[in-house]
Amino acid sequence: MNDKPVTVPDLLQMKAKRERIVMVTAYDATFAAIFDNAGVDALLVGDSLGMVVQGHKNTLPVTLEHVLYHTAAVARGSRRAHLVADMPFMSYQVSPEEALRSAGRLIQEGGAHAVKLEGGQRVLPQIAKIVAAGIPVMGHIGLTPQSVHQLGGFKVQGKERSTAHEIVADARALEDAGCYAVVLESIPAELAAEVTDRLTVPTIGIGAGARCDGQVLVGYDLLGLNPGFKPKFLKTFSDLNATVLAAVRQYAEEVRTGVFPAEEHTFHAKTLRLVEDLPEADGPERVYGVPV
Ligand code: KIV
Image 1 (cartoon, protein in one colour):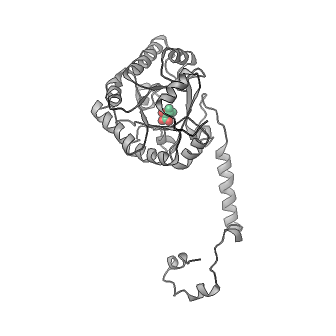
Image 2: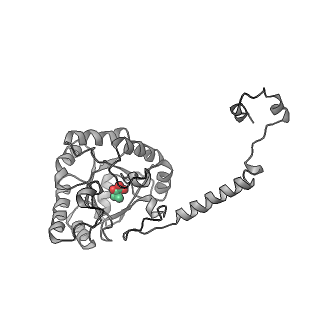
Image 3: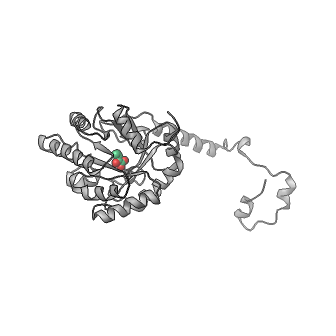
């Protein structure tokens, strides 16, 4: 792995060379820096932030301002990974013009390198408009969480012949409209393999089997920060929930028993007189600012 920023042509090359693409979601500068140092190829500021950061049941309450805020934080934390910002619900559906304005803000104010939006043939005018402005677009088909109410829940898509054909047609239409990559979410592995073989742009799977050109997972999920969330497609690569729980319990115990802070965590005034010389305190804030 070198230090050069990962670009759209790099990702296309990776498909051509059959090198798998690694993408993970991030929402803040700290995790972005860790994932970037781990060598992931792409970071996605997903609207999954509605669930894992904001505590909602789905992605629908997430706004463009929310994604902008988190994208800017991730941009500050990362230096090598290709940075994709999700276009949230109602930031692109109304018109191609509004879609372009939203995408432009994610690039200009958020520092994203590309945007992702959900849907197949019904969002082609939006994709064409954004791509024509020089902004790379990642498509997203299969289970599209912004349509959760229409789909009747978070269910595997494309299990019947007709819906499978529709997904293949959508994938080709996205490539023709100029998408440089397509996320395939929660579809049978055989269908994902078929789509992957038919496209020249990379497919990035989540719950779509091993034959996609790359994989994406929600960062919090792969780290085991979400212990109640156990869908079939997810592998947890750590148990950070248990690690964080144990660490914070120990911190609480040490504060309560006076073990923390210890001598090595404590500042002292250079001379005792410095403290004695302080004027009468008006309130606690006067003492808090004691120089050392
Ligand atoms: O919002 C998100 O995190 C996503 C990925 C799961 C693909 O769209």
